[in-house]
Image (cartoon, rainbow, N blue to C red; front, side, top):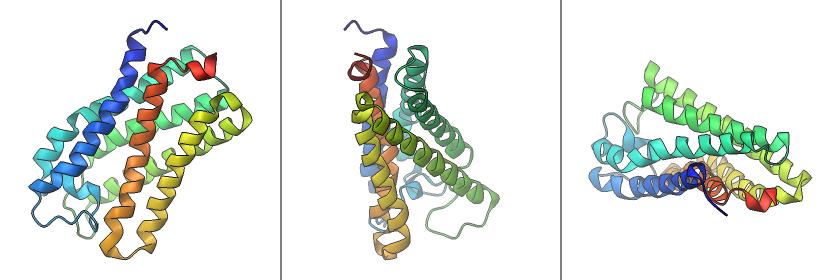
Length: 213
């Protein structure tokens, strides 16, 4: 297969995953007393967090690459009419989620981690999170349903199922597990979307051949 620029841009999804993972792993070293098992990932990038600068440096590729990858995937499946309309709608919603996440969290960063949500900025941060979660769940469910209807896209549907399961573990777990383990289950949710974006990027890199052939 001869790859064009849009195919190569699919690798930005993998770059985004590696960048995000690096930020999650190494930013806590710049945050004295940070407990990854109990605290949310967003605490690392809070405005008052001592790790904010390191987080911004490590996550810079993620902030750009995640949106580039999702957008290129959406453009490719739209221009080439990949699979069914239902499948493409799922991709579009997932792309919208990436844009909401990238723009929303930059406009409304968490003011300070580990405290009550009281200010307008903090409330809006939570609102962005709710929008991101709802768009993620809606897009993944649609892709799973599309995969059940069309065996050609069952590979993506399986990955969507894995991502959806991780989100459920995160969303349900954060309300069930003791507070000292909040950070563990929360990471299932945050890595679900980033990981699935990397999967879509790999499919784009290969021109969605397993679907279009």
